[in-house]
Image (cartoon, rainbow, N blue to C red; front, side):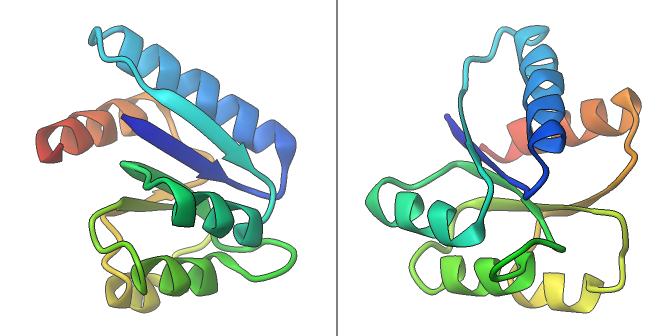
Length: 123
């Protein structure tokens, strides 16, 4: 399983990676994690090798998360997309790009645990 985390704040990427590794590790599930600061960099990587799951911030420098998701969907319909954001203002747009979930910051371990169960049931 390949998981991408796209967020322009390095600390947010690192924290989410660590917390997801803990969630998956407690379920004996292995995943390879890839972190990207910009949507453009993620899209280049995703074009070469698909990701199973994408955690995508909406408010970023360069192209935002919504635009990144739209471009992703033009060549990858299967990646499970989770928006990680401080606002649900873009929920309607999230439906348009088939977002699986919105993870609203700050999120709890309980939120991550429930989301992890949902994602694993879909894979």
